Image (cartoon, rainbow over all chains, first blue to last red; front, side):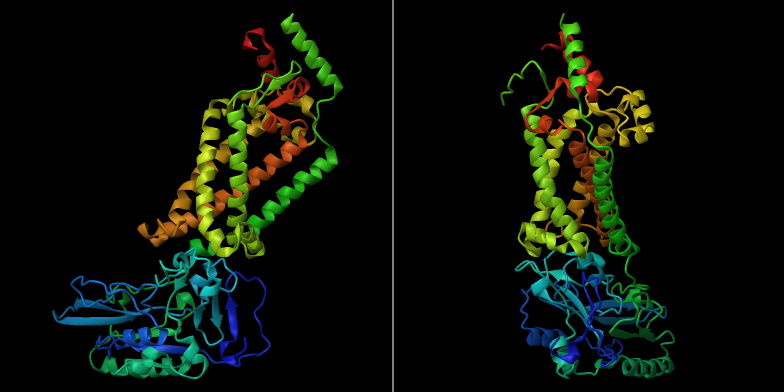
Length: 301
Length: 215
């Protein structure tokens, strides 16, 4: 890659090592979304549209503030609003900015069959290179967070890039830049974990005893993390998975099955040919033809 | 579809309808298997070139697969009864070693299809059915969205497994066609020699040369 900031760590459907001479030149970066500071203004959604030149169709209202209703190929981030009645009987409005989590162990990349269509940079960003995308939708089956979407226009998969183009030149993602309450911050993963830990202490002192950081270990940690008031119940935030992981089915399908099946087919083809060479053809010889004639004459006669 | 009357030293083996369907299945299989294997293992991604590149492969694979399943269904279902395993077939299968070593005289007499062909038939029918069902679930453009992601993931594993067995079975099928000389003409010209039938399918030979067989 021309830019050191875009050094590649993993590449889809590639069995050889990525370029690895520059050791640990880049630190891992992360976006921290503090749901406890979010007011649901959707400025991040607008900034995402603006920077990435995305104009989704104007949808309709389903009785919630979710607008658009879901992630699409042209809406890479969506605020999801949940009304939660806590045990004290008070209403809590839990708002989560949904989008790609940029997993350290990305299920989309594992599932992708097209070489280089999905890459993971050394800084942790998981990026789709649509020019290599073949539109099969395997990334959707691989993702533990239901994030990628295939466009009806061009049949390519799209999702949040974590503004890899901005980050590559030292800028923060557009949503971070625009957030008016400071609910979204960006920096090294270590710094973000540190900031989150301070915020969690603060939240606990204010009565949110289960406040915590969402950085799920099942996917090796993520490069988009949440501070949650109720980290013990991530499902409250519109079904944020409690223990996300790359499915065992996907691991089997895109793991052990590949060399075993390919090896099995090669062995079968080779064994078939070598046995033919060893024992020769099964062939009716002149004796068989004569015997067949005689047998036929007997029945005809 | 007029079937030619074979010469007296030949026996009709596959009718014209059967042969045409067989080759339609074969062509569809080559394209479906190539594009499928290409998406299964990166080492075979180059096979996408057969259908004009990655996007074309992903787009065409399900349609080609559907065509194959349809042609295969028309081809294979009428052969169901002929491919029921019998007691003699079990002996044949117990003596696989003799089959491999060309000691055919030690094998029980085969009817129109021998036990190996029947097993292949049953495996192929099962695999094509599984591929059709799981393939519909995996067809992102039209169907996957209607199913839970867990179902789609399971379908991916089933699809890969059934495809593996089908490609394996086809390798055996092609190897056998090369191995048993005089077989390929059965599926191209439709006829086999008397000696071929006598040696490889004696029970069928008797049936075909009985005066009451209508020939």
